[in-house]
Length: 185
Image (cartoon, rainbow, N blue to C red; front, side):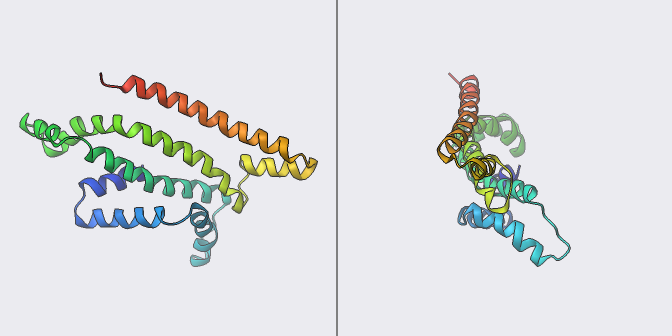
């Protein structure tokens, strides 16, 4: 949702909305996700004394914000890739600017957005392994705890890699099926 809003602000917004979204996108894309999660988990509570953020919430907020910046550019790129003739056709048929965007441009842009969105979702799944730095008990953290108990690093890290691979392969399969289904002749 963050990505769609920022992408629409960049594409359809006025000067202020466009530039606010641009600053958001550039700051987030220009900083590592580990720095972002550390800022949300450690720095925000220091800046606001009454604010307490648990590790899981910090991880979820970070992945939403980080993915949102990339999805904003995916959205903007897909919308701008639609030939202006489609917009002109919608307006010529008597649709308003927003009706043309809603009923003509966005359905076409969604088809173009699907492959890069799928890539972003897969990257976000793999990025969750970085949240080990704030103690989130995700797959990588679980593997680390098991290794601490039995010292079988090769087997455990291989299993963790296989789990991530299974998750991403299933998501890739679903996305390929969805792409095929949405394909226009």
